[in-house]
Image (tube, rainbow, N blue to C red; front, side, top):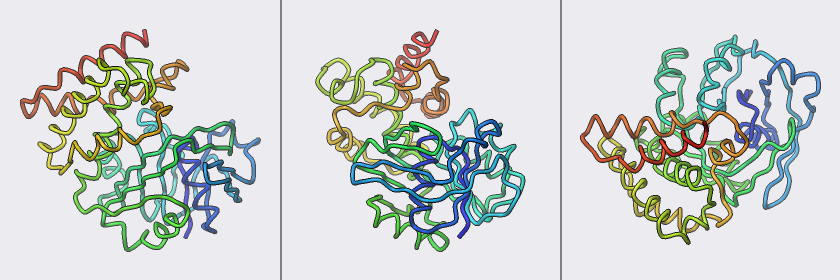
Length: 290
């Protein structure tokens, strides 16, 4: 199949390189100023070894593809979509948060969107060069995408990806947010990595409280999320793990604070739930960014 990657950062690069290494036809959509120097081969360094494969880079997607994988930052999405000038067969968004799904359905149509989430710690170290720092890659997709993507997901599993098709879309989206939001907010507000948060009683309690708040909103929204299962993931995460928001804050880059935190705050208001710790952490991060 033909694939295009919109958002050639850490996550997009990881997915694109993995697909290309499996022999899939991959096109990477990059900014026009990045196109002349973009390498013809992409490279992904992983804990289990390196993957390298050819990939074509373009500044605009003008030819149809079977699957468009979107891995931009949430605030980059409207601008990035200007480079998509042909209608893809299907769209697999890997963005953080939950609000982007409705926007993409408005643009591409309900039937083309296959909601998905990915959990991994990765970085772009140079154009076309990426590094996977976490020992895991967890890719979850809406069950409706299984007829199209089942075979590819099976191949990604052979590369060490943990993949699952999930029937309940709210469970799919909120399960990721229930892990991501507490981690991103607490590490960014504290400046600590996962191991340091776990060793600090004050911040550990805030992590637990933020997790409870997010799961309460998720379940009120129609998801089926088990806070204890997510707590287990926190407890087994690499101690040195940092969130991408934390890295962006240190680097002075724009944050995805609204995309990650606002659905929780809105949900608290809608369902009458206490989300005070989430709001407190968001305020602390905003103060740091000023």
